[in-house]
Length: 226
Image (tube, rainbow, N blue to C red; front, top):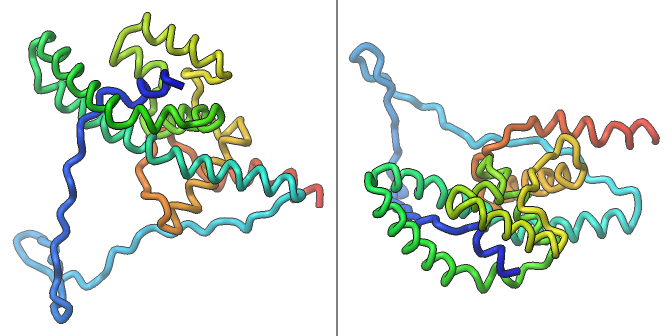
């Protein structure tokens, strides 16, 4: 599974977020400025809450398959999230570098760091975990893993990485398609439930789908048969 280390290549480190302490007795008041006047804002912004349907399974085997998919999705999602973050940071950094020679030098330096930091963990992924990761990278970045490797390395390497991956029945060109692939819908369902519970940190998806429309599509046939 050595080819997987190139999926998350060339993404710089994130800056650590700072958390400011608030005195327990203090009350934070925000103001809205309207034509020079400050108006106190007492409303509180709440995180969006999605009302999810109750999970139903056709049988024990169906439930086991979902639980296995859930375990694998939760395991690899952080890598896809990291890839999206690194891609955004890298693009901003490269945009500030004018000379191609300096761009290549920067890319190689970051690549060595990523390979040394994460390659051992990525090599431990199973075939199915690797394919889920490829699909989630497309979900988070809007680009297939193949195109990312092609852009960040070159087309020839991307071709060979995809050929090597195909030996493990993994395609780096695979897209995340919950509209037409039920497993992808189930992956989306797993993500939404774990975003809701706080087990996974939500990151804005680069691919746009209406989860409720997807649910209606995939669950209606089951409902009609009951």
